[in-house]
Structure formats: structure tokens, C-alpha cells
Image 1 (spheres, rainbow, N blue to C red):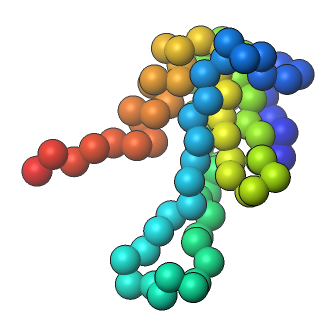
Image 2 (cartoon, rainbow, N blue to C red):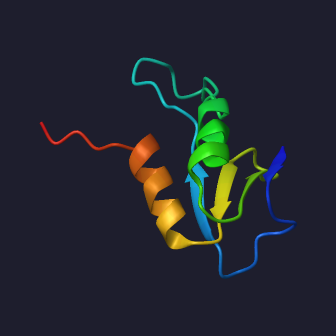
Image 3 (tube, rainbow, N blue to C red):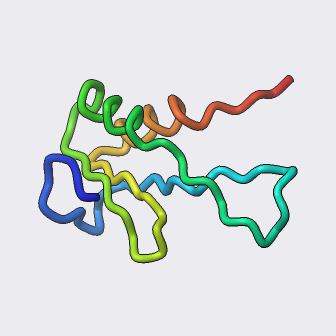
Length: 85
């Protein structure tokens, strides 16, 4: 997977790594469940104000790269909401 609006993310870009979902009930030997990346790509296509790129790394970790930190922060807040209750 390589999607987005830039060839290669330079060192100055901001990564957001998408780790697989972990379930408390599954045995440790069971593989992790990959997250559905489609809503994240759709968000980037609609909401990102600057170039971005989604890359699947060799260890199968999905990384979204953003040219500007504000896009990376808005993406993280949208998909990784914390519940303080």
C-alpha cells in the first residue's frame, strides 16, 4: 500500500503508526487483527490540508505520514480518542 500525494516522506514529515488491534481475550500466540485503514485513507483524502502518504512497512505496520504537524495531530485525535471516564 502506498497512497497519498507525495513520492517519499522526507525526514521532516510526521508519522502516525497504526498498530494492530489487540484483544484482551485472545491468546498471546494468536495474531493481531489489522485495523481497517479505509476510513483513515478517506479522512486523509477529505480532511488533510497538506501532502500525506500511507505506507505499509516491511513488518506490516501501517504508517500515515503527514507533511504538516497539524494534519498529523488532527488525524491522531480523530482515530485515537482517549476516554477519561
